[in-house]
Image 1 (spheres, rainbow, N blue to C red):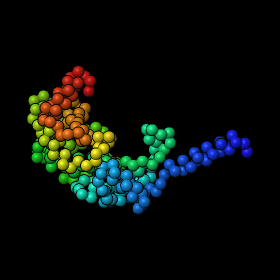
Image 2 (cartoon, helix red, strand yellow; image 1 turned 120 degrees about the vertical axis):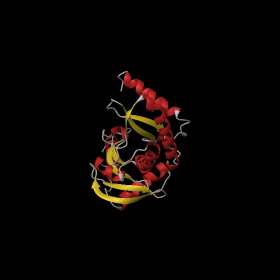
Image 3 (cartoon, rainbow, N blue to C red; image 1 turned 30 degrees about the horizontal axis):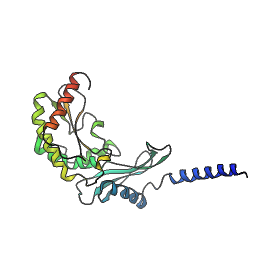
Length: 236
């Protein structure tokens, strides 16, 4: 065998080994759970535990687990693996899909909305979300019947609602994860949904969870005004 052919053979063998290493691992069981927990722990600088094995699988055949941070059992969220290409690779590989920040929102939003907005969530909203699929959907993906949207907002509501949303965002902060890398995480933004009167489009008040608390309610007010002006201009 020539050196050239031998070199080609080594390249082919290396590719086979690479593809094998990137292949799917176990789709349920202790090793599968440990792999997910070991990934999430450094991501959020928290320890998690599996609180429920649902027995239900996602489209790639991986079991959907319900997890909770050990230091805060009020928060429950979905986690599972998927087998897909990442944005920086041409190969498919095993990745983890989770909704911790959404779980945090749903754990504390009901009491905060009730206190500041006199707005009532369903008594067990976590169970209600099970019908939406393998993980919580982000607020902007939910349909118009989601029960935590503030509907019918008008210009006269901007100031009082800005103050209420400001207080709600502030009270989420003691519960945010201590990760120093939170700013780099997809989904690290608190999103409070609402709709303007006469509009069907879902709007969001956003605040990056990794940054400092909003200085005052004016930061929220500016978002209301900007979105309202875009709506009037037809740029929803």
